[in-house]
Every structure is written in C-alpha cells, then in structure tokens.
Image 1 (cartoon, rainbow, N blue to C red):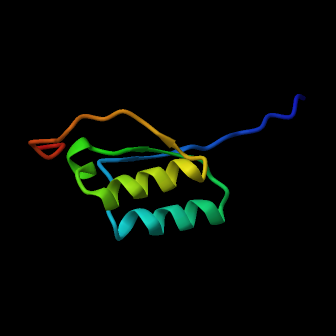
Image 2: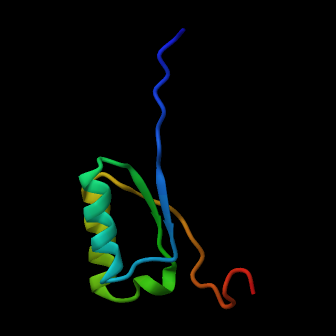
Length: 76
C-alpha cells in the first residue's frame, strides 16, 4: 500500500486581532502547521494590524483575500 501523507491547513477568517492573532501564530508554529489568514479589510486600517499581517507572511503563512467588512454576523 502506498504511503499517504496527510496535510492539514488551518484558516482564520475576519482577523487580525492584536491579542488573538499572535497567540494563534505561536501555537501553529509550535506544531509546524501551515495556515491561511483571511483578514477583513476594515481590520487592516491600523499600521499595527498591517504589521501583524506582514509578520504572518514573513514567517511563511499565507494571506488570503477577504471582503472589507461583514455588516451582519454570520448565522444571523
């Protein structure tokens, strides 16, 4: 039987968050898991948030395209 490697990629939507995102990055780095961030445009208005996304990309995670905002919460 052929040896099959399974891969897992985590996706995070609606970021970034100055408190949560660094903790998520720490945990996925510990586990050597790739991730894709889909930051909402309105969350990237501050330089701090843009720096956080840049840092995320610099450590080889991917950044995806997202909408600018979610005017209504999902599931509502």
